[in-house]
Length: 80
Image 1 (cartoon, rainbow, N blue to C red):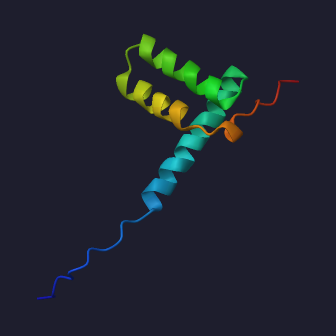
Image 2 (cartoon, rainbow, N blue to C red; image 1 turned 90 degrees about the vertical axis):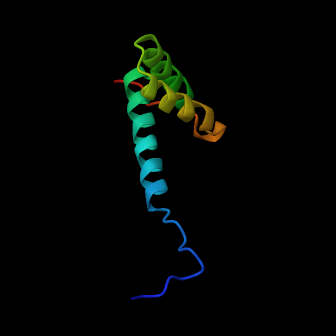
């Protein structure tokens, strides 16, 4: 039988990194759909989810909206 270590292993950052990539991808897609900056796109998606009573999606977009940094807020490329 193996001995248990007294120090717990460090949690993996892999899950956090995957979540960050998923959130960034969602924001970029929302920016394309709404043709606006990231914060406005997240607000649109949150309002849409709230109106349609999709609580989990609303919470996701609210979290994204509140955690976007000002330097990430940039205008999506305009359509040709």
